[in-house]
Structure formats: C-alpha cells, structure tokens
Image 1 (cartoon, rainbow, N blue to C red):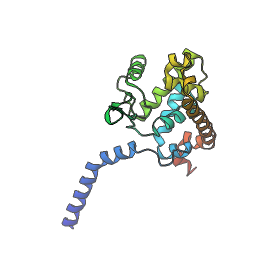
Image 2: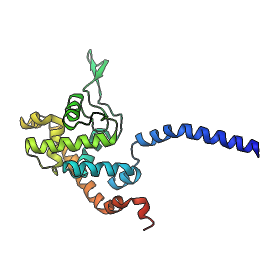
Image 3: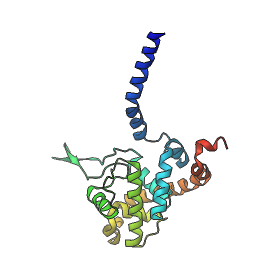
Image 4: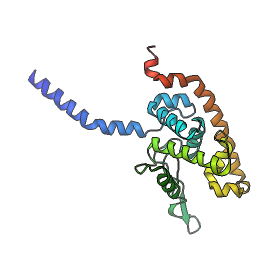
Length: 212
C-alpha cells in the first residue's frame, strides 16, 4: 500500500507540474472547425466571452471581427506574414511587415491601440487582447471613415489598407484585395447566421445548458 501511495504521489506531482504546459497548449491551438462560429465558441468557451466584451465595449457585432480574424490568421496565435526575399527572390530577408498574432496587427497600429486604450499589458498572441484590438479598429473606422460596423467588406478594406489608404481608394488598384473582402463579407454573414442558432446556449454557458 505504501509503495502504491508513493507511485500515486509521484504521478500526481508530475501531472500537476505539467498542467500549466498542457493548459497553454490547449489555449494556443487553433479551433478544429473554423468554418462554424458556434463550434469555435463551443471549443474555446472563453473566446465567446471575450468577443461579447468587445461587442459591448465597441459596439461591434461579433461576426465581423471573427470573420476578419479568420482571414488574417485562421485563428493562429503566432501567425506571421510571408517572408520577404532579396536578390531576385532567392534570399529570405525578414518579413513583409511587422504584423503578428491573431489579428495580424502591425507594430505601430498596436502601439496606437495600447496608447489610446491604456491596455498596456496587451499581447498580440492573446485572443482577448486581439479581439479587443479589432473591436477598437472597427470602431475607429466607423468614426474616421463613416463605415458601418456591420459592413465587413468595407471594414476589411480599411483594416488592410489603413484609414488613409481607404480614403484614397487604394484598394481600387488591387482587384485581388477586393475579392478577398468579398470573401470576408460572405463569411461574416455565415458566422452571423450560425451564431443566431447557438448564442443563447453560449450566454448561459453551453455546458450547463445541457443539463437545463
């Protein structure tokens, strides 16, 4: 009995020591089914709360930043832009931009967000911070360029080109970008439809709702 107790103690000690690593691994793994917003929030139950907080804070519908995040990073916490190449495209030389994380926020824009919101501890590889950043950006797009917070197409063009670029209609020189914005809009509408079917469960806690 004593030997079994020692083995159990050792096992529990090792499990407890590894628990933070296990939790971090789960937290940073992209959702298995990113095509369905309900499945995303069922798997990452704390993400719904963060997205709802951003909605309440910035007046941004959940499906718009989530569709934009799908396009930007496929919900990968450590997503990076493509590598840049020099010498006739043969030698890798850094990245094409400073974008990083769930939202693919560039370093200067992220700094503006921190300065304006006071969220000094924000990290681009943290979902809560990334979705709040996107809510802030969508709100700013509305105030600066008068684009509806529900207009995923124009919001994405602002997100990609910046507020000044959008004003100059720089996207008109990029047919490929307009096609991507159409895809973002279509996904946002699918996400919105999906969310209507599960949001009540998410609000009350989907797990406990099973026993209601």
